[in-house]
Amino acid sequence: MNEMSSPVETARSGPPPSPATIFEAIVKQQAVAASYNRGEVTLAPHVIYTRHDEIYVDAITLDRDGRPPKEEKLGAFKLSGLAGLRITPRRFTPSALFDPKDKRYEGTLLMAVEQG
Image (tube, rainbow, N blue to C red; front, side, top):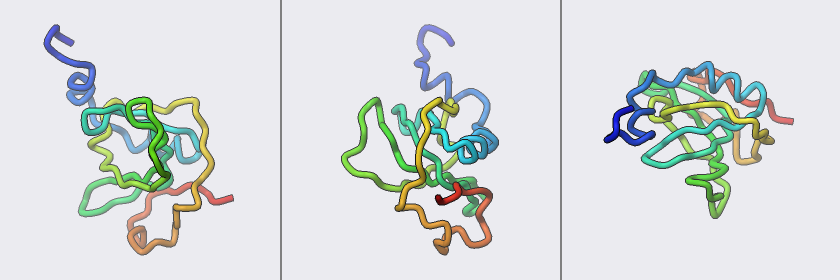
């Protein structure tokens, strides 16, 4: 990293995020952290799937730039946009907002959390 680069810019220029990181996080029900849209996010990934030949992750945002969201919601994140993706020690419980039978996952689902 040179003097003019920010950690976010450096992370974006690194290798693309690996779906294996999301697979592991889903299986272990552990949150992931990454840079996304110029901010730091911690996400509880619930499903990884494909759409238009791209890989997406639907996840609950646990915090954005260190702050919890006002309300819980399931958001879609393009895997390639999650720079510096890494598993955290923080565990999560699958959200009732996630429906693995949602039509958008038909024929595109790669892996999803197991509902209790």
